Every structure is written in C-alpha cells, then in structure tokens.
Image (tube, rainbow, N blue to C red; front, side, top):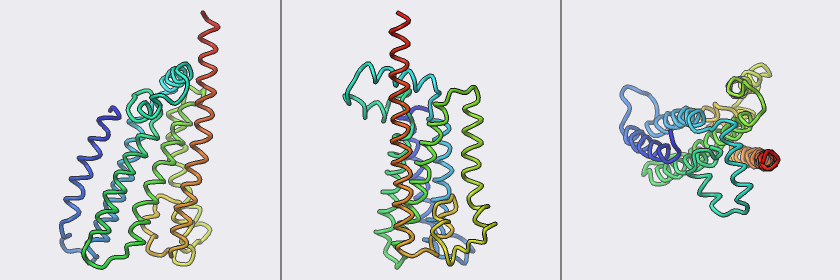
Length: 238
C-alpha cells in the first residue's frame, strides 16, 4: 500500500463509515449520536494500527531515504517526501490521515442539530488520533533499530503498550469516575471520556501532544544520524 493509496483508502472508508453512522441504530437503548461516534472512533483506531503496519518502511528503506536526504541537504522537497515518498518514514502520512479524519468528525459534531456534549465528543475524537500518531512514531523508531527482529519487537512493544496500561490501572483500582485522566492515555479513552471534566480532557490532549513532539524530536535526531553514518560509509567505500 502506497502513501497516495492510503489517503484515498482513508477518505473512501471514512465517507462510507460516516454514511452508516448517520443511520439510526436498531433496538439499542443508547443515544444514536454518541453510540455511532464511539463506534467510529474504535474503527478508526483499528484502521490506524493497520496503516502503521502497511505504511512503515523497513530499516534499510529508511536508511536509504535518510542518506538521500542528507546528500540532498536542506529542506527542499522534504515535506513532499514525507507525505508521498514510499521509503520515507510513515508517521507524517499517518498523522495527516488522522488530521483529516479528526476534522471530518469535528465538523459532524459541530453541525449535529441535536444537543450533544460537544466538548466530550471533541476530546473523544482528538485523543485516539494522537494516540495512533504516537504509536506510529514508536513503531518507526523500533524498525530503525539494528536488529534482525524489528518486526517482532514492534509487535511486542505495541501490544504491551496497548494492553498493559489498562491492566495496571485496573490492578491499582484507579476508578475512571474519580480519576479519568490516566484512562485518557490508554486505548480505551473513548470509553471514559464521559467521566472526564474539561481540565482532564485538556491535560490529556496536551500531554499526548507533548509525548508525540518529544518522540518525533528523538526520532528525527536518530534519523539524521543514520543518514550521516550511511553517507560516510558510502563515501569511504568509493
């Protein structure tokens, strides 16, 4: 799956999913809007994990791209590469896809005529989007490791990072109705956003964005170093 194809896939998928979400659920004692929005968020998290698997290039591909960028120098064509080039790291493409998804769902929330908890629903859209973006960077960092088992490590770390935090919170008896903030950093944030107040939702979004920024900075440094090392090795071999 190429990055260009992924944008088309996400757009078509979200269009169809939103069309289904506008239908009234049958025999459900739940508010149709909240139920459909939560279902869309869950599906989008799964979609995001699938995109991470499909778009993340191998270590050799990333190093080849990093060497090319180091040789090219400067920021000329960098963003075009990050958005469309097949060997470039995947997080930017995945972030763009989820930015589009978030804007689409935010428009739906704001334009919905019935009375809804707009703040909670906006948080419901934003936190999973940043969550997926964080794991996209983590996976790409793991695939850059010098190991023959990068894929296995990526699967283990992502699986553990998704499954373990809710288990730890349950073991520690952290009640989401009293302490919703820790739960907003887990994959189940969509289930507990209704228990959170404005300050908790805001803190969770800022905290996740800070984690994303820190990981992105660290990954960029590693990528730059890998490009420099690959370029020096190529020049030494000539």
